[in-house]
Length: 144
Image 1 (tube, rainbow, N blue to C red):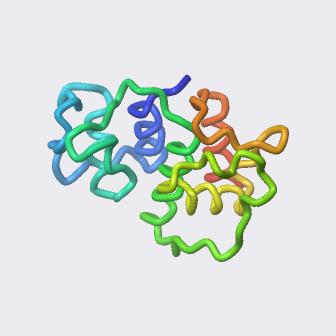
Image 2: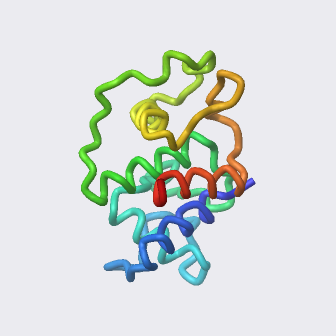
Image 3: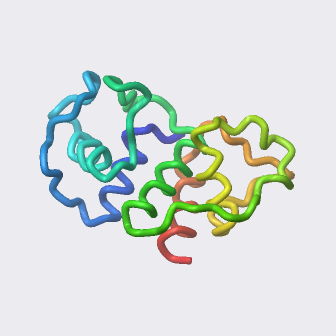
C-alpha cells in the first residue's frame, strides 16, 4: 500500500523535483524535515492536493485509488490540460456509485485516457492503492 506522502512525492519527482516557492504549508501534520515536505508544498502550490482538511494532509494514510487518480487529474490540469470530461466513462462499472463526489471527474477522465481500467467490471475507488498499481497509472499517464 502506498501512502499519500509517497504518491505526492512520486509526482513531484516526475516533475523534476522543482523547488516550491515556500516550504511551509498549512498542514499541521507535515513535518518540515520530512522527505515529502517539499513535495507537499509543491503539490499545494500546483493545486494537486488540498489535504484531507484545511490543516491536515494525512501523509501516512493509505492513498486510495480515487485519491491517486485525482492527484493525476490535477497534475494534468496544472500542466495545462483543460480539465473537462465530456464523455461519461463510468457507466460500465458496477461500483461507480462508490466513487467519492470529488473524484468523479478525475475517475471519468482516467478511464477515458486509459489510465484506469478497473478489474472485473469494478473501479474499486476506495481501495488502498498499491505501489504496483500506482506505477502502472504513472506509466499510462506519463508514457502512454
